[in-house]
Each structure stands twice: as structure tokens, then as C-alpha cells.
Length: 151
Ligand code: RB5
Image 1: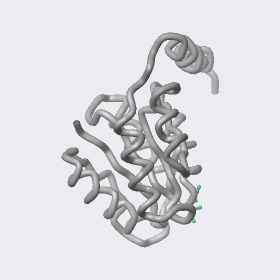
Image 2: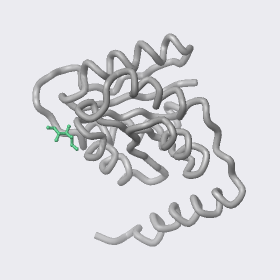
Image 3: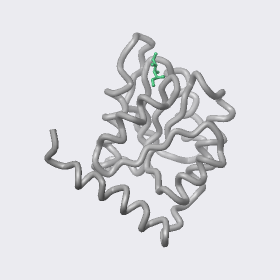
Image 4: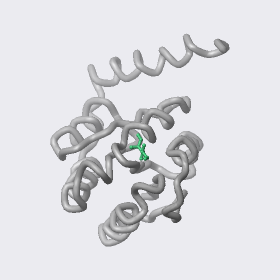
């Protein structure tokens, strides 16, 4: 399975550690940057990874900024994306099982690397449960269609 990973300047070190961990677990990792500590906008990298997931260049995405919030907000503007910010593993498991989150986000200034690894593992090990959750996810995605064409 291919995982796309992206981050802003606040999360370069954590991105590298998470990438190594993903490779240890046997995942293929595609790095969408940034690899620089120079100040940049999380929106750029959130959009890059979201577009890669939406285009099926990668199977799933992981996004990291200072809080995980800005980068997930940007990703969620791309059609077909459900990016969820998590700070602990129970939520990470549930966003896959119930919300079919195709991008996991977290904050390098909020959690440490061990928690980040736990979150990543919980999310990747979980599976979408479908059924009533599929209906609810379909309702979320239908909102995108209602928004189309608006400026
Ligand atoms: C960058 O300073 C910071 O604003 C960003 O990483 C993130 O926390 C935004 O949501």
C-alpha cells in the first residue's frame, strides 16, 4: 500500500520519523514535502497530498503541521477527501472505521513521536465498517456536490 505524506516547516523532523516508521511497517511512502525548515504554508502541502489521494496516485495520506488543523482544513477542500485530525489512537481507529477518513492529520507541536506512531498504526490497522456509516459518509460527500459551481 502506498501512503502519501506531506507537512509544513513545523513538522519536517516528525515527517521523517513517521516515514521511517511507515517503511518499517512495510508501506511504500511518497513524500510530497516540504523538506525545508523555512516558513511556508501548510495549505500547499495539504492540497498536494489531497490531490494525490483523490487521483489515486497513493492509497491514503498523512499530513502533519504544527497542530494538524490548517493542513487538514486545506486537504478537506479537495473533492473526495475526508481528512481527520487525531491526537490519540482511539479517535484514529474510529475515523477509519466510521468516517472512512482517507487522510490522517496530526500536530507536531501537539503530540510526540511515540503517540504519532500509535495513531498511525491504529488508523492503518483499522478498516471501514460500511453499513450505516457508509450512508453517513455518503451524506457528507453529497455536501460537496451541493457546493459545486458556487464562488
Ligand atoms: C505554522 O506556524 C502553524 O501555523 C502551522 O503549522 C499549523 O499549526 C496551522 O494549523
